[in-house]
Image (cartoon, rainbow, N blue to C red; front, side, top):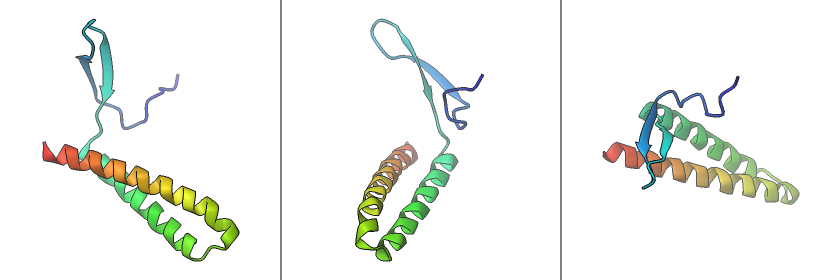
Length: 87
């Protein structure tokens, strides 16, 4: 049976999340894996920017949307990594 969790979720933490005492499982990613994922997203943003520079007007619409999503994911992951390093 396949797990619904990504492969980097090997370490689990259980904590009381609600007043009712319900337990929630939260996965923790290591800093190294976060950095690798950030590097992968940076490469994707660079690739999309280069493709956008050489794209025709018809291709630009799709590439601009993909670039917007990739930049947002990169910014979110950067905030997560920065927050983790501050601890």
